[in-house]
Image 1 (spheres, one colour):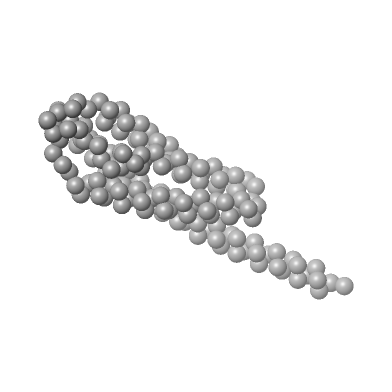
Image 2 (cartoon, rainbow, N blue to C red):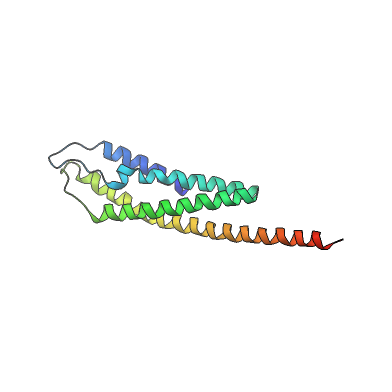
Length: 152
């Protein structure tokens, strides 16, 4: 759900920044917009799909895949937070015609900064539980194997 929100915010920023008029001071194109940072929400959507699949059909390879995609989400979130903080800490002058769009874009970045933290905590929580589930499954497999070997 959060991934879809990120995709919609990227589309909103795309429409917002594409409508800028070239002025004397130029247009406002932040780092997060140039890198498509909010478009990275696709990783969050993929992680959600993997998580739903593993919940319905828990297999070892599925749990490992979910763990890997959650780790990718954590790395993506840390990168996005870093780029957003860099964007919000620097503000170059823009044409007076584009100031409103630049200000609105910065507010969207502040909103997304909150959601990046939320996504980080969700991915970290799922990663921790995936690791514990893998460890528990490994112990269950070894105990079944030991029981099978001990019975004559």
